[in-house]
Amino acid sequence: AARKALEVVDHVETVIAIEILAACQALDLHRPLKTTKPLEAVWELARTKVAPWDVDRMMSPDIEAVKEMVMSGAIWDCVTKFQ
Image 1 (cartoon, rainbow, N blue to C red):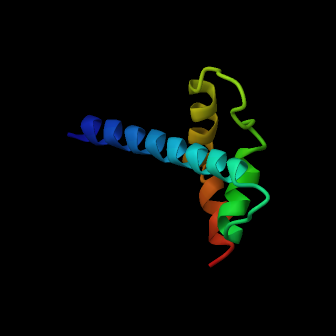
Image 2 (cartoon, rainbow, N blue to C red; image 1 turned 45 degrees about the vertical axis):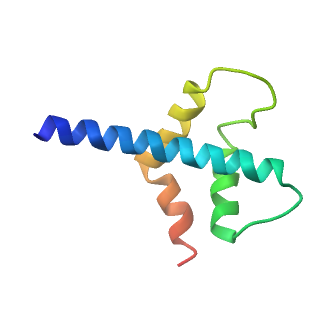
């Protein structure tokens, strides 16, 4: 049961990373419009490791880079300063 729970957590972290990347790409496509300060901060953080998708490329390195931010707590730290 514990191994299954760890697998579920890993999958959730991957899904969160994908959602963050999708949000960042959506923001890029809607520039110069701005969003909330917390989401802008997450965008800035994600863009330090992952470039916008303007050509086809493998997504797994980008997903892993943002997943590492999620797992390390960097995303959490980035948004909690706005509470």
